[in-house]
Image 1: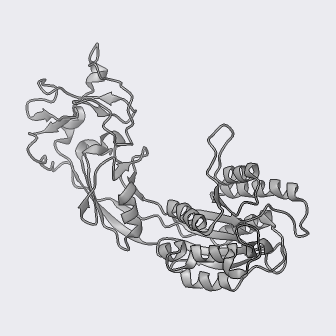
Image 2 (image 1 turned 180 degrees about the vertical axis):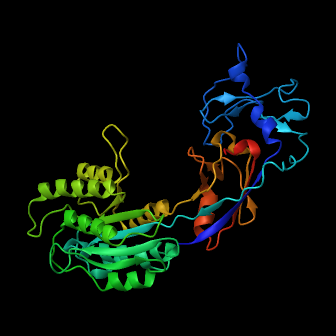
Image 3 (image 1 turned 120 degrees about the vertical axis):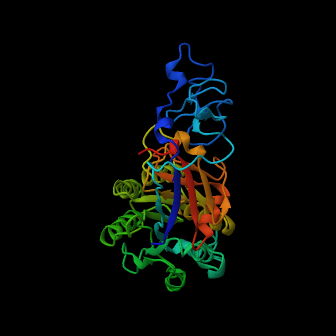
Length: 390
């Protein structure tokens, strides 16, 4: 797994005095007007008025007022209501009692098992016609994955990719190539050597179970989340082509079993020969959605362009921009930090934030895209004393 240093130089300035500053919202009766206004401590949006900041519990808060003496004679009040040592004309001095702390983080590298339906209907085009292999859904899928611009080719340095295809020549078995980094060439050869037979059914429940069993037997590297991407063009059945309703329920059960073992399953329907209710239920089971919660996204593609876009969205989405820290930052004070990526300064709330757990630095938008595309990313962060939880 690729690892890189996240240098976080934490400037602890007059830590004792800063920690002693109390909330005016808690101490004053009545409290200042904007106290307890709801806000989001993670989003980074400027939701509190001047003189206030968003606390970790999601309410606008302040420690001080510009003309008050709440911070003491040697400290000043910042524009967002924090007591800060010294004046506001430069960084606070380093307190010898609070030594610098260096965080490290790992760029998360997921393990993705592509689970591809190779039943006979994959030799048809997106309209269900047999117009030759070159116009088939199978060929479009091959290009979407391993062409020079395919998702596996693009992300092979950031994802442990493997492929499993079903059924094999012996139904309901599977054929596969193991997961690995830099695996696009092996995957291309494997897919092109396993063109669907002109006949063949769709034993999806057994295929999902096989992918789960493979993850159990061949565990991903430490810290690598296991993912199954199921791409199928037909409703499930057994090896005789019958028992479709039973196979539907078995597929949902298999997807739920995968999630129970910590393996997320994403559904991509290739073509339009699918039951929307079943597709939604299968996606929800694979992503652990409970009754009453919003449905998980189930992907569909009715042409080659949509198929490429769907693979890019699913797999691009699981290449994480979460950076795990070996320290603890207060998400309510994270906006006082400074973060750069490959030497470029990032903007809090637009390019980065700290998740609610306080140990995850999350890159957003274009910064996330840059991280994913960097072979050796360099991330640096600096946080003031008040943003660090010891």
